Image (cartoon, helix red, strand yellow):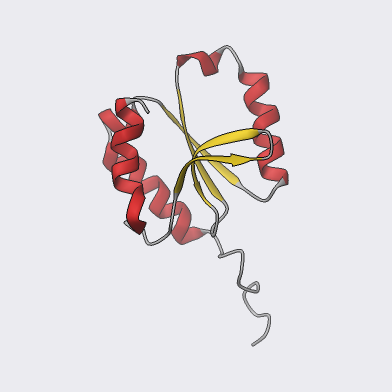
Length: 109
């Protein structure tokens, strides 16, 4: 892991955001940097090489979206420059997104 990945993992692990994340988790032919399986969220730290492989990233995101995942992407140095912002984005997504194992609002009531 890079320094940035280690730093982010130290804040995602042990359910510090209220959900369990896995690191370097395989999903189909891809490896997610960090994945919360229960909430279908993937967090990716993208290095400079991702600018040159935008079409490959788009195919990857389409596959992951097709598997029911949402992908949050951050520049690889974001946890070093703005950890609070990275974590707040994750917390906000988790708060705003319905839990996939619960019926939509109004059903079953």
